Structure formats: structure tokens, C-alpha cells
Picture 1 (cartoon, rainbow, N blue to C red):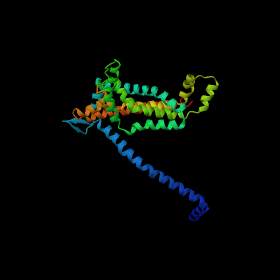
Picture 2 (cartoon, rainbow, N blue to C red; picture 1 turned 120 degrees about the vertical axis):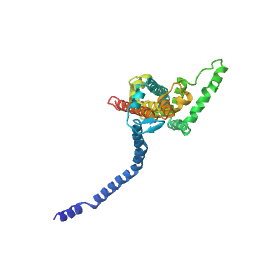
Picture 3 (cartoon, helix red, strand yellow; picture 1 turned 180 degrees about the horizontal axis):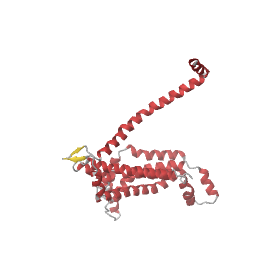
Picture 4 (tube, one colour; picture 1 turned 135 degrees about the horizontal axis):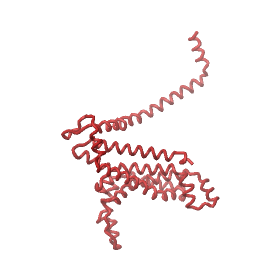
Length: 304
């Protein structure tokens, strides 16, 4: 009787419904199969590498060789060192400064592209902002090094008008120039995409209520694009905080950042565990900043 009831239930399902269910099941299997390579990639090259880095932070170095161990000496050594604390604060400050400068300078550019240019011109400008990333960031940094030296092009031009030479290398100015070379086009693009999706009726309503141009920007445009603006600044901070090229080639490691400190730890006595401590500290900072930024951007106040 039970077998007869089972057959009766299968026969009661219309053929069209069975075919639809089978197609849905096949679609789910296909989606999982397509997502499997990315999942494997993330597990092998991110999760596994991060786990190995976390384990190595508790190992020790004996006779210039990394020995599997379990000790907190690396953490105590790094976090109790005054140079690590100073370098951490300096790196965080550099990243925050680069994010703030790029966000302020990029907003007028993004605003002009989104609201002042026709559609065809917008596409052309977006393409021009993407083109610099077709070349190596290292090559662009070396180009700035040629321009910023005491005998470089910029000081030569300033010398023609009786100014300079100015020291524009191995200082904060040079490092910020390198950071902006890396992040400025990206910040403009992210801000532009956010501004382009603003409901234009809100701006028209503000103008109908006799709201001035600057008042409209600060009361309507910026609040409406708050999510994109915060995410652009966060992206700029993440790239600047972990950058090694600009502090090394333009700042000449004076003073060092965390990325330089990590490389120095490896070069001096093969201190891979201490370098792992620095790397994990950077990752924890970036995760905390990203989480705080996402919480602020997608908060209830940010959606209004």
C-alpha cells in the first residue's frame, strides 16, 4: 500500500512541474559548479595563507632559521617596542591623511563629471581615469621620482621664475604624491558612480525651495551619496595603509611605515615571525576600519 501511495503521489505531480523542478535543480548545481573555482582559490590563496601567517607569528628564530614553536615572544617584542608603536601611528596617520586629501580633491572632479558633462563626455573621462592602471604603479612612482628630485623637472621650471630649489623627496610630501598617484583616479570613479545615481528630482526640489548651489551640495548631494563617499575614502585608506612603493621609493624609508618595517624584519636575521606579527596587525586594522566604515555608511542615518 505504501509503495502504491508513493507511485500515486509521483503520478499526481504534473509533468510541467516536474520539469521545472529539475531545471531549477540543474541551475543550482550549475551555479555551485561555477562558484567552486573561486571558492577554492580563496581557500588556497587567502584562507590557507592567512592561517599559515597566523601560525608563523608564534614560531621562533634560532640561528637564522625559523623553528616551529608556540611562543608569545614575537608579539611581546613588537608591541612593547617604541619604534613599532610610532611606526603604527605614523602609518595610520599617513593612510588617513591620504584618504582625506584624495576625497576632498576628488569630489569637485566627480561632481563635475556627474552633473556638468554630457553622457558621451562622461564615458570618455571614465576611460581616461582607468587608463593609468594599464601601466605599472612602480613605473609611475619612478616617473615622480625623476620629477621631484632637486635637479628634476619641477625644480628646473621653478628655477626659471626665480624660485627653489625645493626639497620634494624623502619627506611626507613625496609620500603623499605617491599615494595620490595610486588612489586618486579610483576615488574619483567611486565618487562619480555614487553621484551619478542620485535622484535628480531631489536636486530640482531643493532648487524649487530656493536652496543655493552650495547649500544643495551639502544638504542634498553629499547626504544622498554618503555611502559611496565613505566607501571611496575607505578604499583609499586601505590602499595607502598597506602601500610599500611610495614610502620606499619616494620617501626613501625615512621615516618607515609598517610595510617597510615588515620587510626590514625579514632582512634582519630572517625574522619572519615578527614580520607576521606586523602583517597580522595591519590586517586587523584594515578589517576594523572597513567594518566601521561599512557600519557608518549603511547605518539608518546613512540611508536617509
